[in-house]
Image (cartoon, rainbow, N blue to C red; front, side, top):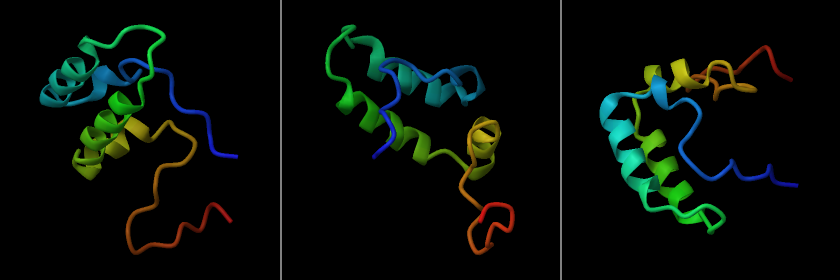
Length: 79
């Protein structure tokens, strides 16, 4: 099935983000109430993360399961 959604709240890699992205994310999550539905906040968070430069994202996500392969290259390491 689909992976479980990330936990509600600020992402764990906040300190790796550019300051402007941190400010935007803090603004998104500031009014979030624990236990409430956070799909809207996740959607906005995703949009901000998706708008980051590739080098910033690769720095953040390089410890993740596997970062998206660079465009135009077949990733020979995962079959």
